[in-house]
Image (cartoon, rainbow, N blue to C red; front, side):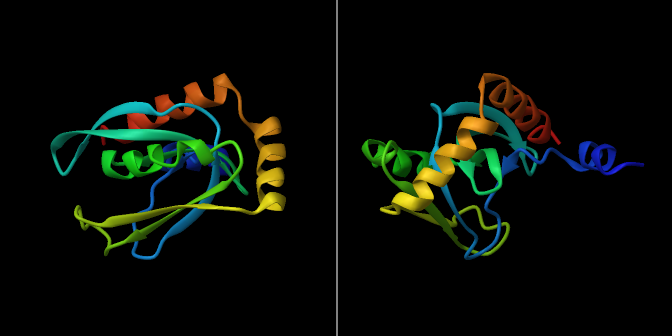
Length: 138
């Protein structure tokens, strides 16, 4: 089995979940959020898909509504700042908290914008949303 086949079987690489204590990511936001429906521990739940670009390329950052509201509170920074989200709480802790901040780093922002120009479009977003829906039903 090829790497591509294995990754397809194991789950999409275009999704980002912060699942361990101290996990952190820097990104720029490239589109509006998407409401995702899924299951977690057998319960129906809504999650928010945040289209972002990191140094690794385009990802759909899947997070909860509390974190999405924190991101919304700094929406005015999306066009000029790198955004950082850091998770605080052990793996599996549904009450984990997420620290959200805007970082003034012109060089990183410029780099991420260049990556976005090459790797993000409406088709990549549609594929990521489809993958998220499938992943969240498992």
